[in-house]
Length: 29
Image (tube, rainbow, N blue to C red; front, side, top):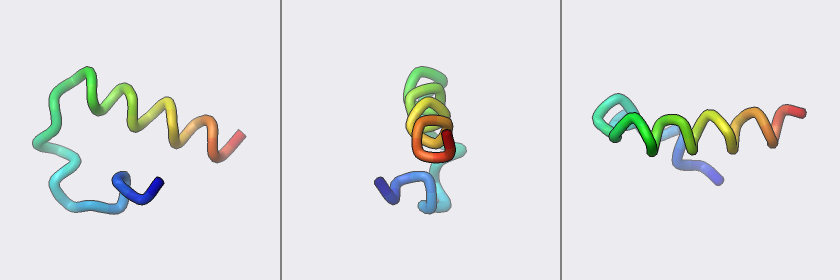
């Protein structure tokens, strides 16, 4: 996934940000 590289992440909803964080944590684990 590369959506966490996009500059508009701040405009996502809280749920979407949480999902992004979950994916980031999973990829870093």
